[in-house]
Image 1 (tube, rainbow, N blue to C red):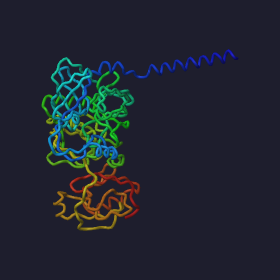
Image 2 (tube, rainbow, N blue to C red):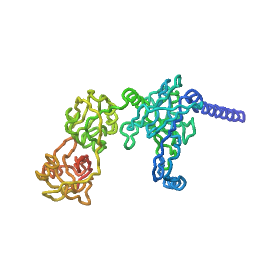
Image 3 (cartoon, helix red, strand yellow):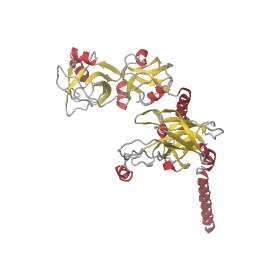
Image 4 (cartoon, one colour):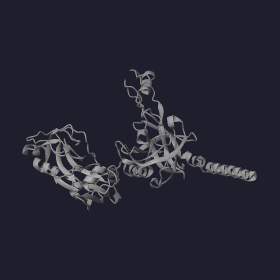
Length: 476
């Protein structure tokens, strides 16, 4: 028995040692990647002529009040007198994309620079000129006068998997060629006011100065440009965002060829399709971009796209969420013909559209001022709303042919509307009904089950939005 026990103990010890050795072998080793690719990453600093101002210096990314107070106390305000010599300040990173000196970085790194300095790991320094910048995607292309430079290799961001190891090389806080590593946390992230970039989210330590630097996969290929961090203090908090390299390369190509970026537009106002909206419109699951309104004379108008359509695909690419549509349309060359698949009144339809060039897209707003006033009133209906009919003069002023104005919202109402809103259309189980009279609206509500889910198209000021309501009262 003792011999058996001893054998079991030895076997367990050997098994644990082997497992530990295997775990050590499986830990990633970044040394080869850094040796091969590190010399293609550069530090970028700029010189900017001083602007006379008494304002507190602005530090990108720093929102913490205590940190700002430090700058108020210890950085002197500029005083009248002879201009001091401009100071070079390390702002970010970049990487070489061609042997003849083209470099990719972020637009905000070189924005406003009077002089740009590029420094290599071997301490060589070059002056750079800006070839072009695109603020919408935060991409910039700069050029130095040099040849036979080490250039990075490019990977395919579409093949990145969540949980995969990635590496960043950059100059956080001016510390050149700093290497940090982590994993891909998510893909296709949308950020506020960033409609044209499906960001790669990572937990790689990124700090001010990393901006514009490359994000590598484990094969040593650049898959993204480190661009933004989520931070309340200006420092790393585990949320970093990179621009996919395929997006950046498309932008840099246009900047090098034309000096500007041309984006497509179709002229619609859209909103997200929630689960309740999907139920109201008869969709099997929430997907697509719900069209609130169509600009008159726009490509969408000419193609036959209507308000209340849900765009399911564009140019053969699926639109899973409303944020997908601006990206897909924006990357479509103006003047090209594209196929659009829409969900309309319970069935799909395919349309052809000629894409125009983007000037300014709008997104449906929920918080906008009301303006019309009622001419007639009725008792509260099953939504807890008192509505009235628009006069001919009001319809003319609002450019409407139908609609009911909300004159009162009862405290127990579940409807997310307010006094002065105009209700245009009701959607239930894929059926769209234009609202033309108080009696008609109340009859529609009276015929619904208490637990019915309905959607109202609401006009507020110059904008429209769809509002979903779950459940009605037993009676008005």
